[in-house]
Length: 314
Image 1 (cartoon, rainbow, N blue to C red):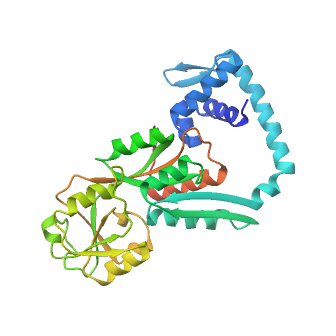
Image 2 (image 1 turned 135 degrees about the vertical axis):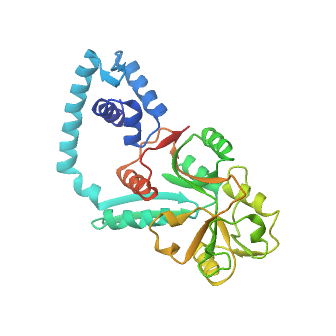
């Protein structure tokens, strides 16, 4: 019997809700329900019964969970006495992401808060196109992925996640904004329509993948109807410099909602004639139990995006 699964059952008992326990454990509700059914099948007992307020242990379940907690307490004592030095000495965190300043900020915060005593440190923040991120996570190359799609492409994105055995967790939803420098001729407007963009070059990345699950598909499909001028760049730093030094513009999320120094010289103006929104998700393999470094990073992401209640899709 998997020790991690036993910890999950104790968490359900502590919280009294499978859904809230799943959120606390950074797994989907369906994954946690499946684990509960598997343990019940192995033990031959019903561990919880449902009430109008959540779930509580059955008589057999209370007896079982009591013994489980004794076993876990003994394991934690053993771990603390003999393995704690090894645990604090090594930290591994492998993240694949699309270009996103909030993710970079959370990654820096993670390092500053958690890595001071690490003797062995392996932190990877790998910027990739959408489908690469999905496959890196599905194939266990990276523990976590962060990527964007639009409200119109969300169904295709979720279908791809299910196909690859990946579960997705909503972090943020932002209107599509025109990003321009503070001294830009369009700066200061409450909103901007597509007609007003025709006179200015669209700054974009050279490798933004145009696929049915990437938010760029929707934005580009919209913008190709109006744009005749383009400036192509390869990285976020160059893009910010080009926007800051020219009359070019970029279409993307509204990062002004977050405390990011890189956004101070840029204005984020809603695009008025589109219903598109950009949705940001973090993903992991279905049924994967995030290790402590990943849990800490996910919590920093949620705090950075200011998401009080998580939505989980499968």
